[in-house]
Structures are given as structure tokens and as C-alpha cells.
Length: 128
Image 1 (cartoon, rainbow, N blue to C red):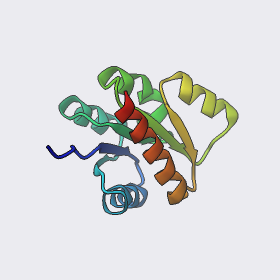
Image 2 (tube, one colour; image 1 turned 120 degrees about the horizontal axis):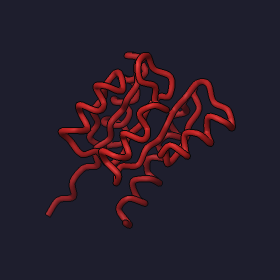
Image 3 (cartoon, rainbow, N blue to C red; image 1 turned 135 degrees about the vertical axis):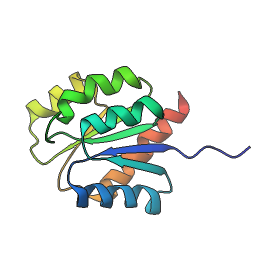
């Protein structure tokens, strides 16, 4: 029996960054990836599909990543969440973890750092 590919959802309003992350996740890391441009789209997608890992930006128009964190956890409590932001601080980090994030990365994203974090989180998920 073949192992199911891990599915990752990217929530990022910047189309270029969204495309870069999705391509990296699929082509470099071999995971199945999907992407959306805002929190509302994310909720529609999460209502229909399960994701093992969710990567979300914090600053987005409309619903921010911080706004959607509790809803993401409610819809898919088993999914692990990485928040990314260009406007990081100790306060933002603390609030993100309190609202349901499992990990935190500051932009600019170093793909090697993202790779290691995703691998660590996905292997943790497999041990559950």
C-alpha cells in the first residue's frame, strides 16, 4: 500500500509569494500543495478538503492570518499550522501560538529553513 502524500495549504495574499511557496512545496519537497489568496477562500477550501499542514501569512486584506487561526484549528484540529510574517515581533509570535499556530517563520523566508520545519512537523504528525 502506497503512502498518501502529505497535503499542504498555502494561504498568502501575494500572488508571487503564493506561487513560489506552492511550487517549492510540490516540486522541491514532493508534497501535494494547494493555495488560496485570503482567509475566506481558505475556509471554503478547508470545508471540503483535509490538509496535514497549513502555511498562512499573518497580514492579508480582509481576514488576517491572526483572525483565521482559531477557525483553522476548529475546522481541522489535526492540521499543523505555520504562520509567516514580514512584521514579526515577540508579541506577534506569542499571539500566534496562543491562537493556534504550531510554528512561526519571519519573512524573508529562507527555503532551507522552511524545508527543515516542514519535515520536522510532518514527521511529528506521522508519529501521532
